[in-house]
Length: 124
Picture 1: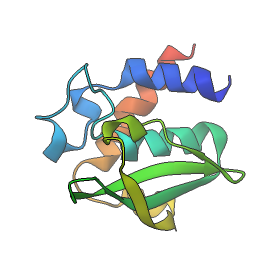
Picture 2 (picture 1 turned 90 degrees about the vertical axis):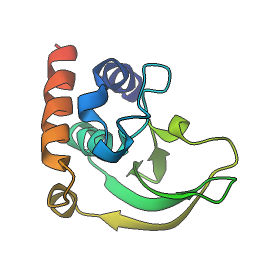
Picture 3 (picture 1 turned 120 degrees about the vertical axis):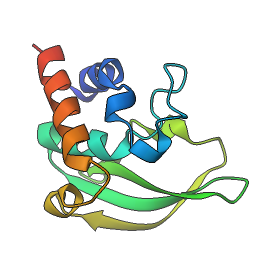
Picture 4 (picture 1 turned 180 degrees about the vertical axis):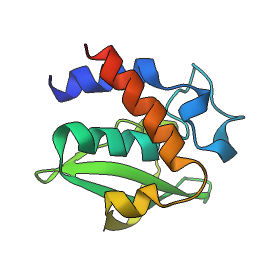
């Protein structure tokens, strides 16, 4: 498997139940990346290792949202970047440990488990 195959499988696996709960009202098949960054970054780490990076996405209108993506051998992999408008900047990056992310509230464990299982089945 390569990164593109994993990306396609993730796209087929995202749904409202894998979305960060405060963003579920905004989630749709038209913009399936909304609220998927945390669980997605955990699944990418499962398959390719590397680091999970936490940062803030600052949109052109000044909104500030937390965001997660992966860094693999000095290459950023961000399958959920499309949830933000053009012109968004990412600031205050820091590496986060998987265990710390899994201890976060808002159903991270559950969303990750659902996404991980769907991806595992989808890659078979």
